[in-house]
Amino acid sequence: MSDLIMRKAAVITVSDKGSRGERQDTSGPALRRLLEETGWEAAYTKIIPDEFELIRSELVKCADELKLPLVLTTGGTGFAPRDVTPEATLAVLEREARGIPEAMRAESMKITPMGCLSRAVAGIRGATLIINLPGSEKAARECFSAVLPAIQHGTELLAGRTEHAEPGAMTGKILAVCVSERRGEQKHPVEKIILRASHGIEGDAHAGSGHRQVSLLGAESVAKLQPRVREKLQPGAFAENILTEGLCLYELPVGTRLKIGTAVCEVTQIGKECHGDCAIRKAAGDCMMPREGIFVKVLESGEARPGDEVIVPR
Image (cartoon, rainbow, N blue to C red):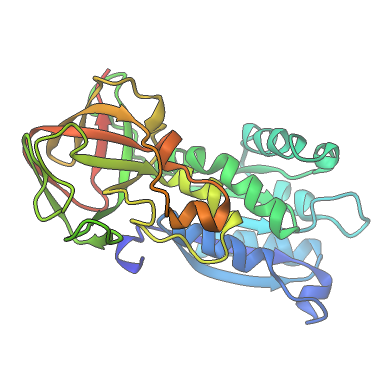
């Protein structure tokens, strides 16, 4: 996904045993994979012990020197005497973002009553968003996935991208555009697509005069299923033409018009029953496309590529 990466982040693992090589770090690599799957680059990674000054120093370096828009820490958020990640984080924050850890704890509470014991904090230093995550690989993935849509919007606001197509419009980003030249083949990412009115995507085997001309799926939906699958879910794995970020696609009513790149489309269907041989369902026991994928028809021709906006007018 190197051609889809648009943002850079840091992942800092806080662990005494991990820093000494006595325990393998699995939460850090898991977070790096999740970042890459959703259009981020883990540009800086490090494993450090549970030392207040070291944690504080690394956070300052990532925000002030490297100027990374997002910093994730994993570990040191519990009740143990050496769990000082929240205190070190609060020492460098200029503004707290309390809603983020609240949302993560709420998600954790759905899974275990011990979720309320997390002391994770989040906040802003300069133009950097810093978020504490649990040290457990499973919990770190679950918490990160729960706040992923908000993270993208928050970092864009910090970067000064506050403009909208029009007041009240909802916007998202295209992470990947995919086609398959033959039916039955998995879709693969391409540099750009041409959407033709009343037809769909030029060169895609599923284009035609029907109402399911182009399929879309949110990266947020993919992230929900990724923990159940060993392999990284690549763009096109769910047979989607367009992978987006920042929009709850499946909540858009049929008939909604949206601008995809420079093309204008209309939502025609929410979800579609899986084929009997759906590889994702076989591997994970579930598939997001039937519930959270959408289909559109092209009303006005245009082009779309990774990084373009998807705009839903008010």
